[in-house]
Image 1: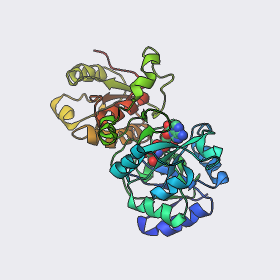
Image 2: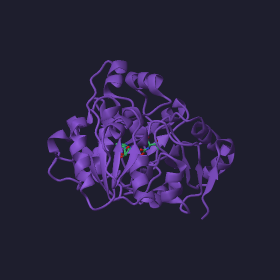
Image 3: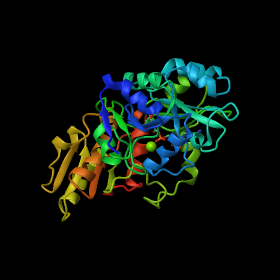
Image 4: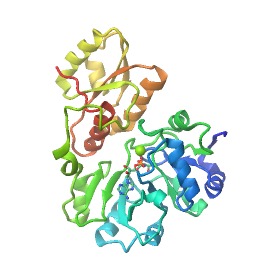
Length: 339
Ligand code: TXA
Ligand code: MG
């Protein structure tokens, strides 16, 4: 199959493909998604096939308005309405209880809940409106690989497997949306993203459980790379935890007999001696730019320069840093450079 690339002005043609049950990748403010009509079971099944994704992992339903959520979900709580008002459109996905049989088990993984998201991208909001149906969208990468932040990344993984891509350039946030579970008694963050726990707490005036509370007690830091291999490039990633570790990390890299990749801010790249066998990838100035560039950097070393070992900078796990470190830890399989 030929994968057609559509500009935002050609959204009507992309919407026709969605209506015809085809797969079309779409831009959001976070990462590119792999879109299909959420009410077409055959199309939804193809999403899992194209990605190679386990079929019990539920999909996010992307909507252009709240009315569509209310069609499928049980009546929204006051907290949910406040969060919608504060953060939609934007990088906050919310999980709601569904009306009975409102969505196919292929969408929900057989759960009585579903995740809803109103992405902040004008072209994709018109795609959903023109198609006249909500659109499921996992990240548009091969399962297990870093999420795509450009249409080129999508093509690398899915060219010939999907009908089209709506290309709106590079995404702005770079890490996937915050996933907030509002289906139980206490709101819980299942995946950290650009909308932080404290921002959510400030809006709803209620404590939010964070990922640490769910998995902290059962984490086994001594088993790197086993249960955490998501967002995993072909290369081995070594996390450099502290700014003061960089001279030792770079000295170690310089002694290796292979080409090494180095992902760090400009401040680190300019203030340290970078050995000749190290290829640099700039993470910009701060945690915002680093989050935007993280997946692009991992993909760059995998596909363009075929580098097998990467040193990558850590940030404080606060604010957006919680999302950045969540993705980096998974990419690295919890492997750290130790001085
Ligand atoms: O930023 C994003 O969220 C991107 C863009 C394309 O919107 N999408 C995305 O989708 O990251 P995906 O499928 O790669 O990640 C969705 C996450 C998965 O970890 C999935 O298990 C979880 O949300 N999820 C979806 N529905 C759920 C549900 N009903 N209960 C619990 N977790 C759910
Ligand atoms: Mg994903």
